[in-house]
Length: 145
Image (cartoon, rainbow, N blue to C red):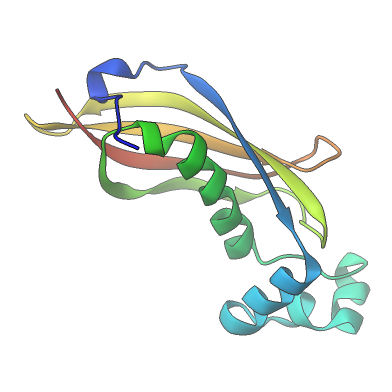
């Protein structure tokens, strides 16, 4: 799909319901064993003592939220690159079979140079119970017309 939104087309407070991501236990364990093998992500007994069961790596949560953001928002925008992430937070544990609803809201935009601008998207994910589990602000460089 060819992007049709440029820097000038995006406004502060534009918002999207980006979609959902479900974290299965097998995905949780696979990610944790490969990238974040702390006991509460890979060992049921250790996780039970501290969290009442296995919890997803925060890094897995952040990555899982990226897919709906890309599919629902960034594919329509003339993205050049990312410039970073601010205010990355994990508010509550994500557990096996949780389904996260992801939203994206433009919270700031500013010129980057003559050809590009920076758009800051506030990303939030709530679990199936409506509890905020993850938030961050993605800094995205977007082409100008």
